[in-house]
Image (cartoon, rainbow, N blue to C red):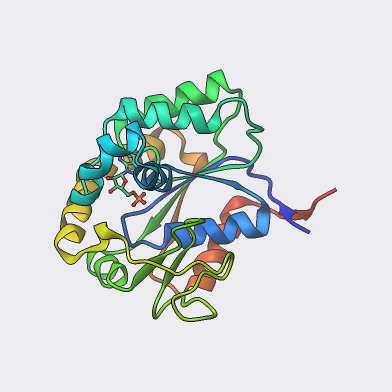
Length: 227
Ligand code: AMP
């Protein structure tokens, strides 16, 4: 039975390779968060080869951000009309323009973010981790060949799909993605740290994954059983 936390809606920040998506998977499994992953929504659009997918394919391959207006359209589709209980945003907001978009969604869809988590990892460690990353093309679950292997090699634990490397985990693109993160994340993190110090939590992402998870649970407040 999923447990509940005092914090209902959360945003997880962290540079590419920080482990934030694996942490998000685990939080979702344990506490029933609905994952809202802009990167995964974009990769799905590319796989479907729909209008958005065709527009963003080159940006994703190059490790560049896609325009805020497109992210808005994607999220409007994904959030609108659904039960917005226990949302976990992974990969959004990525620009100050998207910070404003999130505030707009909070007011129009009547939810409020309770916690902003910053999973801190050095650039060198993030680059090392990204080199062994694998992702499930069907459900988006992420793995690492050394740090977090699937139970059966190269196979998703959840749905048995064959795991893939992401094209943007190519060594040539990894540096660019780190640079883009460093360019945009500073102002966003400073914004939340200064304006909402009571909701902003820094987690040491260089610890073993279990320690990262338990520090995160501690930050998110006391858990109780559902029902
Ligand atoms: P991620 O899976 O979050 O690492 O995202 C993969 C790629 O998708 C990024 O390198 C960007 O090209 C794009 N992307 C994901 N989320 C956003 C966002 N919120 N704003 C702009 N581009 C994004």
